[in-house]
Every structure is written in structure tokens, then in C-alpha cells.
Length: 303
Ligand code: NAP
Image (cartoon, rainbow, N blue to C red; front, side, top):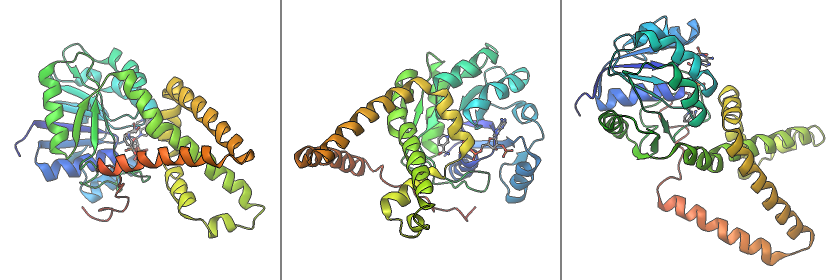
């Protein structure tokens, strides 16, 4: 694989950025990779584990002269980071991000960027419940979708970023911004909120069941706890920044829940059976599309 960008800067050094670094090394698509995280502890850890070719002590230093800059911080922090790096951005550079929400990130970042850079927002649909610089692994993006929301950005810049993500193992698609936020509310954001809620309910209940909820947790609940262990800052920012779409989906969810509740109360087995038959088909579709594994323990101790 040949180099696509001579200099790549990763701002924020958590799960996604560290996975990008290892995937870049595997693919050989970047010359030098610089990195920056806001806390000295994270920067020290990154230096210790050889994450990035050079760890810088400011975001501006990391971005100075970079051909591709990827913002890998929580959604709510994107705007402030963009403002900080704007003065050093090289003409013709590509600025991207990996935020789980797109409209709010674009609105927060775009106003700070000079006109001579290309802003191509992105979102890799890949992750685990782990966070921080030691949690990344090169295979995270393999066979996962990465969605770009270019909104009229320079086609050559978009093509380069597409080739870059493909080299990192992803399948790439371009989608409209609002569509992205609605689809992700269904497939990721609302399910996380439901998992957080269910684990919260179980936690309340465990106080009256002498911890049996934890000791005897069956697969369904265990899966919820894994999702509900996801980073609190990241998910707070997702809900605050994809408010409309998440509330729309939660409204529909509540209506469906009431309908199922009524079917249980009325002993309407046909309704329940039909409903579960329909949902079972969705699971089969996900398996057929090869999107059914999270690889949660894959490579965590490697690199
Ligand atoms: P993470 O592991 O928690 O790492 C976040 C990084 O951002 C850390 O280096 C942290 O610095 C830095 N940071 C946090 N708050 C900041 C602030 N206010 N200003 C500057 N830097 C700040 O997060 P992640 O899972 O890699 O997620 C990063 C981005 O990817 C988020 O926008 C998220 O929505 C998106 N994303 C996540 C997933 C997922 O499943 N995790 C999947 C797809 C996309 P310190 O370590 O110094 O605190």
C-alpha cells in the first residue's frame, strides 16, 4: 500500500485514534503520524507504548504541517479543538473527525476552519466499550462501515479520505448529514440509552435482591452491561448533540413498548409471537451482512 498522506495528526488519543494509528502502521498509508491528548498522563502513556511517531504537547504543534488532521475527541469538544488548531492549518490540508454525531460537529467545527482547507467529516461505525490510548487495536475497522458526510467538499479530498479509510480496513459510504444522525439514533444512540436504563433499573433492584441480579446475570443482561460500560463523557456528548433524532426514536420506542406491555397484560400471544418473528429476521440480516461481531477482546494486549 502506498502513502496517501505524508503527515497525519491525531487529536485526542483514545480508542478510535489509537486504533487508527495501529491500522495506519499496518497499512503503510501515512508517513509521519503526530498525536496530541489534553492530559499529560495520556501523552505519557502514548509515548510509553509507542503510540504515534511523535507526541506533541499542544494540538497546534501536532497539526502544524499536517496533510490530514483527524479530530478524535468527544463530540462536545470538537469546536474548541478546531478553534485551537485553525491558525496553523496548512493550505490544502484535509480536516476530518470521527464523531458519532455529524450535524452538531459540523456546526461546531466548520466556522473555525480557514477556506483553504477541506473539511470532510467522518464516522467509523466501529468501537468497543473500552476507552483510552491503550485500548486501540489495528483490526478495529476491518469490514466495518465508515460513513463520510462531505456536504459538497472537494471531490479529490473526499476520494483520498475514502482510500485512506479503505486502507484501514473499512467499507466506505457517503451519506447525507441528517440521515446519518437519524440512522445512528436508531442503530446506536437509542440502544445505548436503553442499555444504560436497564442496567440502572437492575442496579436499583439489586439492593432488594441481595446482588442476585449481578451474580445470576444471564446473557441478555450481560450484553446490556457491556454496552452500559461505555465511556460516560462520550455518551453524554452524543445525547446532548443528537437530541432531536434520539428523542424521535425514543418516542417511537416508548409507543412500541406500551403495545408490547398491553399484549403481555392481555395475554395476546399472537402479537408477541409475530413481533418477535419480525425482529428475529433483522438479526439474520445483520449476520448475513457480516456485521455481527464486536471483536471486544481482539488484540487488546497486542501492539
Ligand atoms: P476515548 O477513548 O474516551 O478518548 C477520548 C480522547 O479525547 C482522549 O485522548 C481525551 O484526552 C480527549 N478529550 C476528552 N475530552 C476532551 C476535551 N474536552 N478537550 C480535548 N480533548 C479531550 O474516546 P473514543 O472512544 O476514542 O471516542 C473519540 C471520538 O470517536 C468521539 O467523538 C466518539 O463519538 C467517536 N466514536 C467513538 C466510538 C466508540 O465506540 N468508542 C465509535 C465511533 C466513533 P485525555 O485522555 O487526555 O482525557
